[in-house]
Length: 327
Image 1 (cartoon, helix red, strand yellow):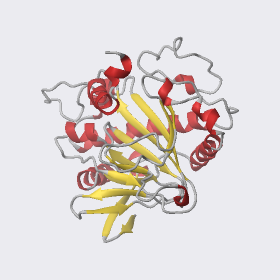
Image 2 (tube, helix red, strand yellow; image 1 turned 180 degrees about the horizontal axis):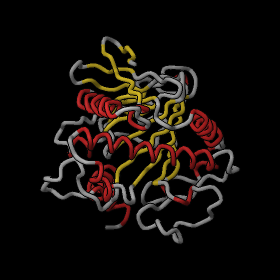
Image 3 (cartoon, one colour; image 1 turned 135 degrees about the horizontal axis):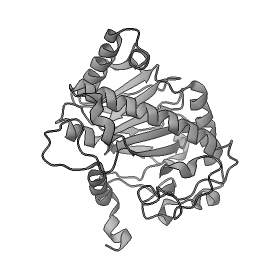
């Protein structure tokens, strides 16, 4: 299935042929389609992905519940209170280099671990994962209103992210077993986003400015019927809109994948412009890999950079961590 955007065709790939194949050819077809899409665009869309529609809808409702809280309540979870910048970020708090205006979006994010699991009352200092995945607390909404649907969706997209990594590895001729160490204790971050209506933003202000993702695989849920995502096409020299379709998720590769694949898979620049006079909700799950793991896409890579090292370098550059941590 394909969707026409301008004069370019962006693929929608049915992953059911890989997840529940009826023949070996089904898996090979999906691997080839993903490999081609990542090489040409760095982006593609998926159906038959295994994330239930009910899980997606519950998450969107959970996001609506969270973002509809008073600003003072959301600011109790401010990223400014956390050295790893987890938590709530208000509209106008993020300004990318080169952008004339700060992003209009508001979001809440974390390196999610068991602390988000409904009913878990652990504090960051007592969590067994706190050293590698600290968290800035979780919203105090009733569990059915926010944590429960977020945790359920997180589990679903964590599994999907690993599936995409498997396909990428197989697409370059490597066995899936190279992910045994890579996927041992992966860093998986979730960012939940609200874009305000067009009438509430300033002229020339983006929902989120043009950027590339700096890690591994991104799994994006767009609220159905709310457009705004655009991907830069180097070949066409233009921005390509990506439609938001019910039960269709968006997948893209980050800078780490482009680097580690030797450029065979692209990390494409993208942005969001909400042109409608209604809010737009979305959620991105970033599946990076075990922090101590090295390149699974090229075992001859002599750099031996680990996932953790690459993410820290980018994080440090973007957020000036040495100053924030007094280093």
